[in-house]
Length: 255
Image 1 (cartoon, helix red, strand yellow):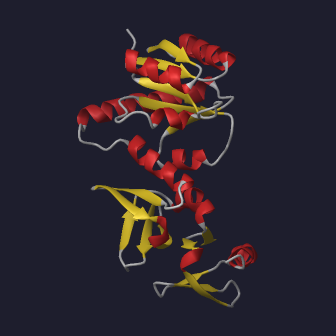
Image 2 (cartoon, rainbow, N blue to C red):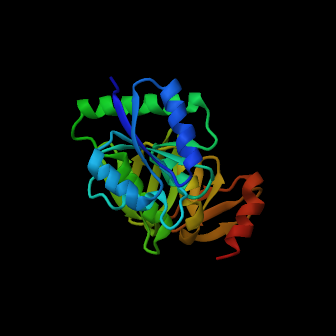
Image 3 (cartoon, rainbow, N blue to C red):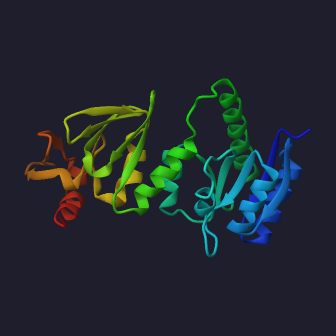
């Protein structure tokens, strides 16, 4: 008996066929109950069949995969994104620890993603009050698309929604990141600095050091030195590494 009922959403039939074949031959416990080649058809299929899992193509004509998710008030299924492109959307997918498969993917990559899906299902059964990573993801997709940008920051108590412009800088503390805000407050978030760097690279943030990511809009001046220091609006002097100095100055001169 299958423990995961899945549908496949992809605009290319050969991709649907290839994935379905891999699932049938190499992934016991997964039943493909339907497939769709567009957002409208996929929405109707989800509403009718209530799958446990949706394999969702990111890039599709007319409407991309994210447009499907926006149509649900509450997402009651897991999602494994599939895409052939290393584009901006993957930043938000990675940041929120969601699963994705980069085409062409191997059987092992598919099996690993399904194992993680099962682990998430078991965790939800234990903690019925846990927040959905998908909700955080959809909020952070807006960070990449809207002019008034907010980022959803996952903490042990839930989510903190903060305007990106209110972030002065981010500092690495191992696998965690401490975020400093314009009101002098700070927040520890359980994401490494690299993931903030990827998510915020297109909204005027620059990694000046292995341990420091700064909001260029919140930089007041630059102090010359071997690498130098960026003087931030909260009074912090953030070290600029020597190897990042040239790229940093080039980027800073654009402001």
